[in-house]
Image 1 (cartoon, helix red, strand yellow):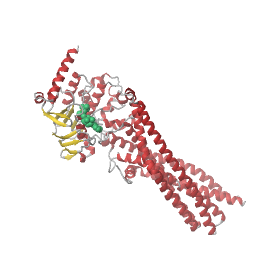
Image 2 (cartoon, helix red, strand yellow):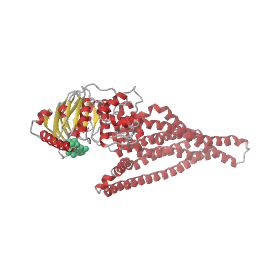
Image 3 (cartoon, helix red, strand yellow):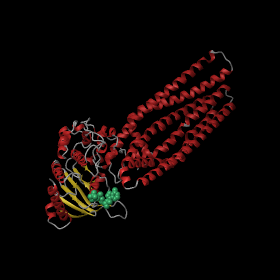
Image 4 (tube, helix red, strand yellow):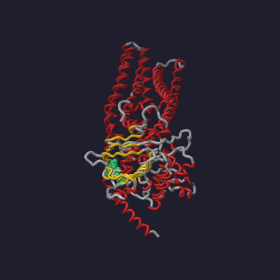
Length: 611
Ligand SMILES: Nc1ncnc2c1ncn2[C@@H]1O[C@H](COP(=O)(O)OP(=O)(O)OP(=O)(O)O)[C@@H](O)[C@H]1O
């Protein structure tokens, strides 16, 4: 978790290429405020002078100036908004792409929730927009106006300038600090709560059928309702604090104006100028009070900013092409909107293909994973040697720890003990931009995106050629289906692959993993949902499609075809209870042989029933 001002620094680092535009927007904002201040001062001077019925000629310049300032203020405000939004939208496009890239390749022990990810992509990234548009630009403009107003007043009366300085310091520093202190704790709770509520919304819609089936709709609704009410309460509290501070600001403007007028009168300043100073002070304090709003905004958006910053790669802005690389596992489910998905995986930039890594040796030494304190470990001191090119099958009863093992290999599950090394480097220290090319593949419940078959596959390799697509799809047994579609590779597969059968979805995810061709290819139940004959064929072609120096770690419940694997490991309750080649294991009493006999018998029954 980022601390201090690190979130802001990380975000602003991304703003560097747009610094010129941001400074331009800041200058325009300052000019707008100054035009407003000059307008009030000139109009006041004009009114007071006009009361003395002077010659019209004496007022002409002021009349023209009032008109010019009124028009230029509007024009400046418009151009400032245009420039500010232009710069900001460019920056947040970058931020959003990077956040998406990290979510798509996320490697933590914490499962990623779609709603939470969506909230990060949408409302948290908007915090970046607010930081620039509502904090930095107006903050800089208010500071500039304050300094110029003090300088201008000092020319007329140093004593009045002193009173104005005090008023502006209170308006620009003390009140914003008070506003921040009042709202910080509440604001810190609002962003995560919004994330949780977004997750609730996804669960309630996507999971409506399951909730209804298990009679849990009422409880889930009540939980979401409680969260929504808590959020409303916190937002009401924030609003009330805001009103209190706003009221104090109005009072401060009046008091400062009175002090400036008093000081100017005491210094025998000309009556007209005293009036001008009084009104100009009101305007200057009002402009500086924008810092209160900025501080309040800042406090409110810090939690969101922190969440975004946690997803931004450290150090200099990384190349997007290296960020949006494949992990065909659940983490990719973050990308709901097809537009966000498709942009990074377009095969538009063959100049940026991530090269396939050479052979990688992987070792696990006494790896232990315990998800919850007190619960039995999901992996208990597991040691494995996976030299480059090794084909390893992992089998075992449900809950034995197979998927956890793949999670450890891909870095999505952080072990509580032991060591995982890739080519001698600790996995945790392995360069993040290389890790997905070293180890990735098809993880449980791979997400299929609402995009075309081509785009879904190219998430695995953004610069894949047509021939590579064809080879991967053929190996996964998807090519015939693609050929039958009127628009072939451009067939849209629907939300979460809804327009595909379960088997086609699985083949698509497998083809994507094969296309990614990491050095260590992990496959979690790649043939799940296929009938036994199809499963055997797909496993055979998929295994054959891997490169010789590419390691494969296959988790499967189905034991047929494992004779092609160098080693089979049987896990039970997180421990390796048997290991060896398929032929050895079916000749040895134990879980593997029992399971083999059971599956053979079931298969014979299945074949007997098949017409
Ligand atoms: N995120 C998690 N949080 C808490 N416990 C978990 C988590 N993931 C897995 N477990 C527990 O760890 C153990 C191993 O789970 P794992 O998914 O690795 O087993 P598996 O062998 O892949 O099972 P299956 O064959 O049913 O997919 C199980 O007891 C499971 O309940």
